[in-house]
Length: 208
Ligand SMILES: [Zn+2]
Figure 1 (cartoon, helix red, strand yellow):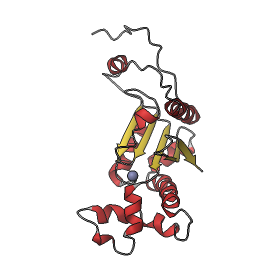
Figure 2: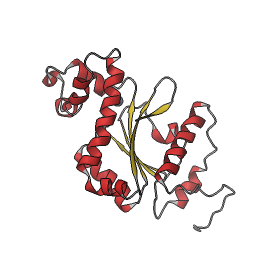
Figure 3: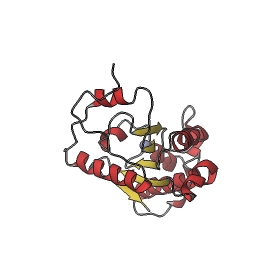
Figure 4: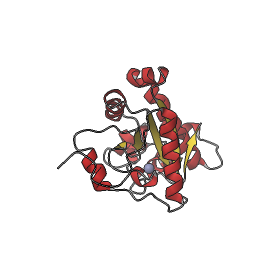
């Protein structure tokens, strides 16, 4: 197959800076909410990216089946470097994956993507006094969410508050644990942001 474009689809937008990347995600999310997704030529994107990739954002999503970054940000193949784990936690392996995206692929944005009704955060609240009551390997995973549940005690909407705090903690942990990413941030090449996706409305809202 030729590497030349064989379709009339426009070239992908040049998204190179952190702020351009944030704008692209927020505009895509608006299209998704309005059911006005652009007509993606996925096969053309697949062909264009067969020999390489330059995703403009790395995303930590919860493993929840209702949180689908490519869909809710209205993107195609090769644009998002998506890492998934219940509770959208920056575990060491997830951070290493983000470092690949930022350090090797030069992605200008990292997004910690929490979501409403998160079962992992809910489980952490329900079992905060004894996580060992949870089955399998869940106690270890949920333990990483306990700082957020502790900080949410007394909140009117405790689950939503803990979800937002868990996102903020994730952003901070990435910057604390990854010199590679924090140096890219200090140099202005990258931003690390967090946000919460609302299952009901489809809206992704940045947390500051
Ligand atoms: Zn979740």
